[in-house]
Image (cartoon, rainbow, N blue to C red):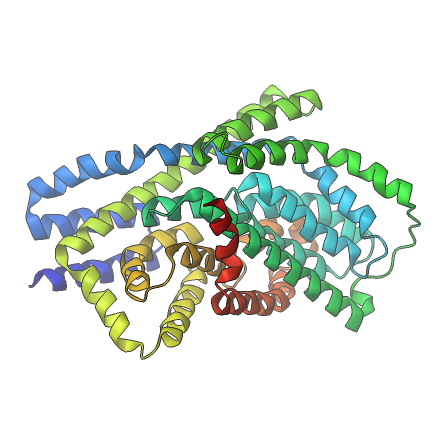
Length: 435
Protein backbone atom coordinates (compact mmCIF):
# COMPACT_ATOMS: atom_id res chain seq x y z
CA UNK A 1 0.00 0.00 0.00
CA UNK A 2 1.39 3.43 -0.96
CA UNK A 3 1.96 6.16 1.61
CA UNK A 4 -0.91 8.27 0.23
CA UNK A 5 -3.21 5.25 0.39
CA UNK A 6 -2.28 4.74 4.06
CA UNK A 7 -3.11 8.38 4.76
CA UNK A 8 -6.49 8.16 3.00
CA UNK A 9 -7.29 4.87 4.76
CA UNK A 10 -6.51 6.51 8.07
CA UNK A 11 -8.88 9.37 7.28
CA UNK A 12 -11.60 6.94 6.30
CA UNK A 13 -11.17 5.03 9.56
CA UNK A 14 -11.23 8.32 11.46
CA UNK A 15 -14.63 9.16 9.94
CA UNK A 16 -15.83 5.67 10.89
CA UNK A 17 -14.79 6.13 14.53
CA UNK A 18 -16.46 9.55 14.72
CA UNK A 19 -19.64 8.04 13.25
CA UNK A 20 -19.53 5.46 16.07
CA UNK A 21 -19.47 8.43 18.53
CA UNK A 22 -15.93 7.72 19.73
CA UNK A 23 -14.67 10.99 21.32
CA UNK A 24 -13.05 13.03 18.57
CA UNK A 25 -9.84 13.67 20.53
CA UNK A 26 -9.30 9.95 21.14
CA UNK A 27 -10.13 9.17 17.50
CA UNK A 28 -7.61 11.73 16.21
CA UNK A 29 -4.81 10.53 18.48
CA UNK A 30 -5.48 6.82 17.89
CA UNK A 31 -5.68 7.03 14.08
CA UNK A 32 -2.63 9.31 13.85
CA UNK A 33 -0.55 7.03 16.08
CA UNK A 34 -1.45 3.89 14.12
CA UNK A 35 -0.92 5.74 10.85
CA UNK A 36 2.54 6.95 11.84
CA UNK A 37 3.40 3.41 12.99
CA UNK A 38 2.34 2.05 9.58
CA UNK A 39 4.35 4.71 7.72
CA UNK A 40 7.53 5.06 9.76
CA UNK A 41 7.56 2.29 12.33
CA UNK A 42 6.95 2.12 16.11
CA UNK A 43 9.93 4.26 17.10
CA UNK A 44 8.71 7.30 15.10
CA UNK A 45 5.10 6.77 16.27
CA UNK A 46 6.08 6.70 19.95
CA UNK A 47 8.45 9.61 19.40
CA UNK A 48 5.68 11.71 17.86
CA UNK A 49 3.34 10.80 20.70
CA UNK A 50 5.98 11.95 23.16
CA UNK A 51 7.07 15.17 21.43
CA UNK A 52 4.13 16.66 19.48
CA UNK A 53 1.68 16.97 22.42
CA UNK A 54 4.31 18.89 24.39
CA UNK A 55 5.31 21.06 21.44
CA UNK A 56 1.71 22.07 20.83
CA UNK A 57 0.50 22.54 24.41
CA UNK A 58 3.68 24.43 25.42
CA UNK A 59 2.68 27.27 23.06
CA UNK A 60 2.48 30.37 25.27
CA UNK A 61 -0.56 31.78 23.43
CA UNK A 62 -2.64 28.76 24.47
CA UNK A 63 -2.41 29.85 28.10
CA UNK A 64 -5.02 32.50 27.25
CA UNK A 65 -7.65 29.78 26.69
CA UNK A 66 -8.12 28.75 30.36
CA UNK A 67 -8.00 32.42 31.38
CA UNK A 68 -10.74 33.48 28.96
CA UNK A 69 -12.76 30.39 29.87
CA UNK A 70 -12.42 31.23 33.57
CA UNK A 71 -13.47 34.80 32.80
CA UNK A 72 -16.61 33.52 31.09
CA UNK A 73 -17.49 31.00 33.79
CA UNK A 74 -16.96 33.55 36.58
CA UNK A 75 -19.16 36.06 34.74
CA UNK A 76 -21.81 33.38 34.28
CA UNK A 77 -21.89 32.06 37.84
CA UNK A 78 -21.78 35.53 39.45
CA UNK A 79 -24.50 36.96 37.16
CA UNK A 80 -22.35 39.84 35.92
CA UNK A 81 -24.33 39.98 32.67
CA UNK A 82 -27.82 40.22 34.18
CA UNK A 83 -27.65 44.02 34.18
CA UNK A 84 -26.83 44.02 30.45
CA UNK A 85 -30.11 42.28 29.59
CA UNK A 86 -32.15 44.39 31.99
CA UNK A 87 -30.78 47.62 30.52
CA UNK A 88 -31.44 46.41 26.96
CA UNK A 89 -34.97 45.35 28.02
CA UNK A 90 -35.74 48.85 29.33
CA UNK A 91 -34.30 50.64 26.30
CA UNK A 92 -36.12 48.31 23.85
CA UNK A 93 -39.47 48.48 25.70
CA UNK A 94 -41.23 50.40 22.90
CA UNK A 95 -39.77 48.33 20.02
CA UNK A 96 -41.76 45.40 18.55
CA UNK A 97 -40.18 42.21 19.90
CA UNK A 98 -38.20 44.33 22.36
CA UNK A 99 -37.46 41.51 24.81
CA UNK A 100 -36.10 39.26 22.05
CA UNK A 101 -33.98 42.12 20.73
CA UNK A 102 -32.78 42.78 24.29
CA UNK A 103 -31.72 39.12 24.51
CA UNK A 104 -29.64 39.57 21.34
CA UNK A 105 -27.91 42.69 22.70
CA UNK A 106 -27.45 41.01 26.08
CA UNK A 107 -25.82 38.03 24.36
CA UNK A 108 -23.50 40.35 22.44
CA UNK A 109 -22.47 41.90 25.75
CA UNK A 110 -21.87 38.54 27.38
CA UNK A 111 -19.95 37.41 24.28
CA UNK A 112 -17.43 40.14 25.01
CA UNK A 113 -16.38 38.33 28.20
CA UNK A 114 -17.16 34.66 27.56
CA UNK A 115 -15.68 33.45 24.25
CA UNK A 116 -18.12 30.53 24.21
CA UNK A 117 -21.47 30.28 22.45
CA UNK A 118 -22.65 27.53 24.81
CA UNK A 119 -21.96 29.66 27.89
CA UNK A 120 -23.62 32.61 26.17
CA UNK A 121 -26.79 30.62 25.41
CA UNK A 122 -26.93 29.12 28.90
CA UNK A 123 -26.49 32.46 30.67
CA UNK A 124 -28.96 34.42 28.55
CA UNK A 125 -31.43 31.53 28.45
CA UNK A 126 -31.84 31.58 32.22
CA UNK A 127 -32.34 35.36 32.23
CA UNK A 128 -34.26 36.18 29.06
CA UNK A 129 -36.52 33.21 28.29
CA UNK A 130 -38.55 33.32 31.54
CA UNK A 131 -39.05 37.07 30.99
CA UNK A 132 -40.29 36.52 27.43
CA UNK A 133 -42.60 33.64 28.39
CA UNK A 134 -44.00 35.79 31.21
CA UNK A 135 -44.91 38.47 28.65
CA UNK A 136 -46.58 35.84 26.43
CA UNK A 137 -43.95 35.70 23.68
CA UNK A 138 -44.35 32.69 21.41
CA UNK A 139 -42.07 29.93 22.79
CA UNK A 140 -40.50 29.33 19.37
CA UNK A 141 -39.49 32.98 19.07
CA UNK A 142 -38.24 33.18 22.66
CA UNK A 143 -36.12 30.02 22.63
CA UNK A 144 -34.99 30.34 19.00
CA UNK A 145 -33.75 33.89 19.53
CA UNK A 146 -31.65 33.01 22.58
CA UNK A 147 -30.25 29.86 20.93
CA UNK A 148 -28.97 31.78 17.91
CA UNK A 149 -27.89 34.83 19.89
CA UNK A 150 -25.46 32.57 21.74
CA UNK A 151 -23.53 31.98 18.52
CA UNK A 152 -22.33 35.59 18.69
CA UNK A 153 -20.08 34.40 21.52
CA UNK A 154 -17.63 32.78 19.10
CA UNK A 155 -17.31 35.88 16.92
CA UNK A 156 -17.05 38.83 19.27
CA UNK A 157 -13.71 38.63 21.13
CA UNK A 158 -12.48 36.94 23.18
CA UNK A 159 -13.20 33.80 21.17
CA UNK A 160 -11.76 30.38 21.97
CA UNK A 161 -12.26 29.22 18.36
CA UNK A 162 -10.36 32.24 17.03
CA UNK A 163 -7.50 31.66 19.48
CA UNK A 164 -7.10 28.04 18.37
CA UNK A 165 -7.39 28.99 14.71
CA UNK A 166 -4.77 31.72 15.15
CA UNK A 167 -2.32 29.28 16.74
CA UNK A 168 -2.73 26.66 14.01
CA UNK A 169 -2.92 29.03 11.03
CA UNK A 170 -0.24 31.33 12.53
CA UNK A 171 -2.43 34.43 12.29
CA UNK A 172 -2.29 37.31 14.80
CA UNK A 173 -4.82 36.71 17.58
CA UNK A 174 -5.31 40.46 18.07
CA UNK A 175 -6.13 40.91 14.37
CA UNK A 176 -8.54 37.96 14.45
CA UNK A 177 -10.28 39.54 17.44
CA UNK A 178 -10.67 42.82 15.56
CA UNK A 179 -11.98 41.01 12.48
CA UNK A 180 -14.46 39.14 14.64
CA UNK A 181 -15.97 42.37 15.99
CA UNK A 182 -17.41 43.45 12.65
CA UNK A 183 -18.69 39.92 11.87
CA UNK A 184 -20.27 39.67 15.32
CA UNK A 185 -21.97 43.05 15.06
CA UNK A 186 -23.22 42.25 11.55
CA UNK A 187 -24.66 38.99 12.89
CA UNK A 188 -26.37 40.77 15.82
CA UNK A 189 -27.89 43.36 13.45
CA UNK A 190 -29.11 40.56 11.18
CA UNK A 191 -30.80 38.80 14.11
CA UNK A 192 -32.48 42.05 15.21
CA UNK A 193 -33.84 42.50 11.68
CA UNK A 194 -35.26 38.95 11.74
CA UNK A 195 -37.05 39.55 15.05
CA UNK A 196 -38.36 42.96 13.97
CA UNK A 197 -39.68 41.70 10.61
CA UNK A 198 -41.26 38.57 12.09
CA UNK A 199 -43.05 40.50 14.82
CA UNK A 200 -44.21 43.16 12.34
CA UNK A 201 -45.65 40.44 10.11
CA UNK A 202 -47.19 38.54 13.02
CA UNK A 203 -47.66 40.74 16.14
CA UNK A 204 -49.07 37.74 18.06
CA UNK A 205 -45.52 36.37 18.32
CA UNK A 206 -44.58 39.16 20.75
CA UNK A 207 -47.53 41.04 22.28
CA UNK A 208 -46.90 44.68 23.10
CA UNK A 209 -46.01 45.35 26.73
CA UNK A 210 -47.97 47.80 28.85
CA UNK A 211 -44.84 49.30 30.29
CA UNK A 212 -44.30 53.04 30.52
CA UNK A 213 -40.59 53.76 30.70
CA UNK A 214 -39.30 57.31 31.08
CA UNK A 215 -35.94 58.50 29.84
CA UNK A 216 -34.83 58.79 33.46
CA UNK A 217 -35.68 55.08 33.96
CA UNK A 218 -33.59 54.21 30.91
CA UNK A 219 -30.60 56.14 32.20
CA UNK A 220 -31.03 54.57 35.64
CA UNK A 221 -31.02 51.08 34.10
CA UNK A 222 -27.54 51.68 32.71
CA UNK A 223 -26.04 51.71 36.21
CA UNK A 224 -26.41 47.92 36.40
CA UNK A 225 -24.20 47.45 33.35
CA UNK A 226 -21.03 48.76 35.02
CA UNK A 227 -19.62 45.32 35.96
CA UNK A 228 -19.55 44.01 32.41
CA UNK A 229 -18.41 47.32 30.90
CA UNK A 230 -15.58 47.62 33.40
CA UNK A 231 -14.29 44.16 32.45
CA UNK A 232 -14.70 44.89 28.72
CA UNK A 233 -12.86 48.23 28.96
CA UNK A 234 -10.06 46.59 30.94
CA UNK A 235 -9.62 43.80 28.38
CA UNK A 236 -10.00 45.67 25.11
CA UNK A 237 -8.49 48.96 26.25
CA UNK A 238 -5.30 47.19 27.32
CA UNK A 239 -5.27 44.73 24.43
CA UNK A 240 -5.73 47.16 21.56
CA UNK A 241 -3.88 49.94 23.36
CA UNK A 242 -0.76 47.78 23.36
CA UNK A 243 -0.52 47.56 27.16
CA UNK A 244 -0.66 43.77 27.18
CA UNK A 245 -0.84 40.85 24.74
CA UNK A 246 -3.89 38.68 23.96
CA UNK A 247 -2.38 36.04 26.23
CA UNK A 248 -2.11 38.45 29.13
CA UNK A 249 -5.56 39.89 28.36
CA UNK A 250 -7.19 36.65 29.46
CA UNK A 251 -5.52 36.77 32.87
CA UNK A 252 -6.31 40.47 33.30
CA UNK A 253 -9.95 39.86 32.34
CA UNK A 254 -10.31 36.92 34.75
CA UNK A 255 -8.80 38.98 37.57
CA UNK A 256 -11.10 41.94 36.82
CA UNK A 257 -14.17 39.68 36.71
CA UNK A 258 -13.29 38.20 40.10
CA UNK A 259 -12.65 41.66 41.54
CA UNK A 260 -15.91 43.11 40.19
CA UNK A 261 -17.91 40.09 41.37
CA UNK A 262 -16.30 40.38 44.82
CA UNK A 263 -17.12 44.10 45.08
CA UNK A 264 -20.72 43.51 43.96
CA UNK A 265 -21.11 40.73 46.54
CA UNK A 266 -21.77 37.99 43.98
CA UNK A 267 -18.53 36.03 44.33
CA UNK A 268 -18.66 33.17 46.83
CA UNK A 269 -16.14 30.39 47.39
CA UNK A 270 -18.59 27.84 45.97
CA UNK A 271 -19.11 29.86 42.77
CA UNK A 272 -15.38 30.41 42.41
CA UNK A 273 -14.65 26.69 42.69
CA UNK A 274 -17.46 25.85 40.28
CA UNK A 275 -15.97 28.19 37.69
CA UNK A 276 -12.47 26.78 38.29
CA UNK A 277 -13.64 23.14 37.89
CA UNK A 278 -15.52 23.90 34.67
CA UNK A 279 -12.50 25.79 33.33
CA UNK A 280 -10.15 22.87 34.01
CA UNK A 281 -12.49 20.31 32.43
CA UNK A 282 -13.18 22.41 29.33
CA UNK A 283 -9.51 23.31 28.83
CA UNK A 284 -8.46 19.67 29.14
CA UNK A 285 -11.03 18.49 26.56
CA UNK A 286 -10.03 21.25 24.12
CA UNK A 287 -6.32 20.45 24.43
CA UNK A 288 -6.87 16.73 23.85
CA UNK A 289 -8.69 17.51 20.59
CA UNK A 290 -6.06 20.07 19.55
CA UNK A 291 -3.19 17.68 20.28
CA UNK A 292 -4.95 15.00 18.23
CA UNK A 293 -5.29 17.47 15.35
CA UNK A 294 -1.55 18.24 15.56
CA UNK A 295 -0.73 14.54 15.34
CA UNK A 296 -3.12 14.19 12.39
CA UNK A 297 -1.37 17.09 10.63
CA UNK A 298 1.98 15.31 10.98
CA UNK A 299 0.49 12.01 9.78
CA UNK A 300 -1.13 13.62 6.71
CA UNK A 301 2.09 15.51 5.89
CA UNK A 302 4.28 12.39 6.06
CA UNK A 303 1.83 10.28 4.06
CA UNK A 304 1.24 12.97 1.44
CA UNK A 305 -2.52 12.52 1.81
CA UNK A 306 -2.98 16.13 2.89
CA UNK A 307 -1.33 17.50 -0.25
CA UNK A 308 -3.17 14.94 -2.37
CA UNK A 309 -6.58 15.98 -1.04
CA UNK A 310 -5.77 19.70 -1.19
CA UNK A 311 -4.69 19.37 -4.83
CA UNK A 312 -7.83 17.35 -5.57
CA UNK A 313 -10.06 20.03 -4.07
CA UNK A 314 -8.28 22.75 -6.07
CA UNK A 315 -8.66 20.78 -9.32
CA UNK A 316 -12.41 20.29 -8.83
CA UNK A 317 -13.11 24.03 -8.52
CA UNK A 318 -13.18 25.84 -11.84
CA UNK A 319 -13.32 29.26 -10.13
CA UNK A 320 -12.54 30.77 -6.70
CA UNK A 321 -16.27 31.36 -6.17
CA UNK A 322 -17.11 27.72 -6.80
CA UNK A 323 -14.27 26.65 -4.50
CA UNK A 324 -15.57 28.89 -1.70
CA UNK A 325 -19.14 27.64 -2.16
CA UNK A 326 -17.86 24.07 -1.94
CA UNK A 327 -15.94 24.78 1.29
CA UNK A 328 -18.99 26.52 2.78
CA UNK A 329 -21.21 23.53 1.98
CA UNK A 330 -18.69 21.11 3.52
CA UNK A 331 -18.64 23.03 6.80
CA UNK A 332 -22.42 23.46 6.87
CA UNK A 333 -22.85 19.69 6.54
CA UNK A 334 -20.08 18.92 9.07
CA UNK A 335 -21.64 21.36 11.52
CA UNK A 336 -24.79 19.24 11.55
CA UNK A 337 -22.88 16.33 13.09
CA UNK A 338 -19.70 17.63 14.80
CA UNK A 339 -19.05 20.21 17.48
CA UNK A 340 -17.31 23.33 16.10
CA UNK A 341 -13.79 23.00 17.49
CA UNK A 342 -13.58 19.34 16.53
CA UNK A 343 -14.79 20.09 12.99
CA UNK A 344 -12.28 22.93 12.64
CA UNK A 345 -9.25 21.05 13.92
CA UNK A 346 -10.18 17.97 11.91
CA UNK A 347 -10.27 19.85 8.60
CA UNK A 348 -7.67 22.62 8.89
CA UNK A 349 -4.72 20.39 7.86
CA UNK A 350 -6.44 19.91 4.49
CA UNK A 351 -8.26 23.23 4.05
CA UNK A 352 -5.48 25.68 5.00
CA UNK A 353 -3.24 24.72 2.04
CA UNK A 354 -6.28 25.18 -0.23
CA UNK A 355 -6.96 28.64 1.20
CA UNK A 356 -3.30 29.56 0.79
CA UNK A 357 -3.19 28.30 -2.82
CA UNK A 358 -6.34 30.27 -3.65
CA UNK A 359 -4.61 33.44 -2.46
CA UNK A 360 -7.24 34.22 0.17
CA UNK A 361 -6.48 36.03 3.41
CA UNK A 362 -6.09 33.53 6.26
CA UNK A 363 -7.44 36.19 8.62
CA UNK A 364 -10.61 36.67 6.58
CA UNK A 365 -11.07 32.92 6.17
CA UNK A 366 -10.75 32.41 9.94
CA UNK A 367 -13.71 34.73 10.55
CA UNK A 368 -15.85 33.16 7.81
CA UNK A 369 -14.93 29.69 9.11
CA UNK A 370 -15.93 30.65 12.66
CA UNK A 371 -19.28 31.93 11.38
CA UNK A 372 -19.87 28.66 9.49
CA UNK A 373 -18.96 26.58 12.53
CA UNK A 374 -21.39 28.54 14.68
CA UNK A 375 -24.23 27.90 12.24
CA UNK A 376 -23.62 24.24 13.04
CA UNK A 377 -24.40 25.01 16.68
CA UNK A 378 -28.06 25.61 15.79
CA UNK A 379 -28.68 23.17 12.92
CA UNK A 380 -30.31 19.75 13.47
CA UNK A 381 -29.74 17.03 14.43
CA UNK A 382 -26.94 18.02 16.85
CA UNK A 383 -27.43 21.76 17.34
CA UNK A 384 -25.67 22.06 20.69
CA UNK A 385 -27.05 25.53 21.50
CA UNK A 386 -30.56 24.20 20.95
CA UNK A 387 -30.01 21.43 23.48
CA UNK A 388 -28.54 23.90 25.96
CA UNK A 389 -31.74 25.94 25.68
CA UNK A 390 -33.78 22.74 25.99
CA UNK A 391 -31.97 22.07 29.25
CA UNK A 392 -32.92 25.56 30.44
CA UNK A 393 -36.64 25.38 29.56
CA UNK A 394 -37.17 21.69 30.38
CA UNK A 395 -40.58 20.34 29.33
CA UNK A 396 -41.94 23.82 28.74
CA UNK A 397 -40.89 23.80 25.04
CA UNK A 398 -40.24 20.81 22.77
CA UNK A 399 -36.87 20.42 21.09
CA UNK A 400 -38.56 20.43 17.67
CA UNK A 401 -40.16 23.78 18.48
CA UNK A 402 -36.76 25.31 19.33
CA UNK A 403 -35.34 24.03 16.03
CA UNK A 404 -38.32 25.60 14.21
CA UNK A 405 -37.58 28.85 16.03
CA UNK A 406 -34.01 29.02 14.75
CA UNK A 407 -34.82 28.35 11.08
CA UNK A 408 -35.54 32.00 10.30
CA UNK A 409 -32.21 32.99 11.83
CA UNK A 410 -30.29 30.35 9.86
CA UNK A 411 -31.47 32.06 6.66
CA UNK A 412 -30.04 35.34 8.01
CA UNK A 413 -26.80 33.56 8.95
CA UNK A 414 -26.39 32.40 5.36
CA UNK A 415 -26.97 35.98 4.17
CA UNK A 416 -24.26 37.18 6.60
CA UNK A 417 -21.84 34.54 5.27
CA UNK A 418 -22.59 35.72 1.73
CA UNK A 419 -21.93 39.36 2.72
CA UNK A 420 -18.65 38.50 4.47
CA UNK A 421 -17.58 36.44 1.45
CA UNK A 422 -18.49 39.14 -1.07
CA UNK A 423 -16.97 42.00 0.93
CA UNK A 424 -13.81 40.79 2.73
CA UNK A 425 -13.01 44.41 3.63
CA UNK A 426 -15.73 44.24 6.29
CA UNK A 427 -13.49 41.80 8.14
CA UNK A 428 -10.08 43.16 7.16
CA UNK A 429 -10.56 46.92 7.67
CA UNK A 430 -10.30 46.99 11.49
CA UNK A 431 -7.25 44.68 11.61
CA UNK A 432 -5.52 46.93 9.06
CA UNK A 433 -5.91 49.84 11.49
CA UNK A 434 -3.92 47.85 14.08
CA UNK A 435 -0.89 48.09 11.81
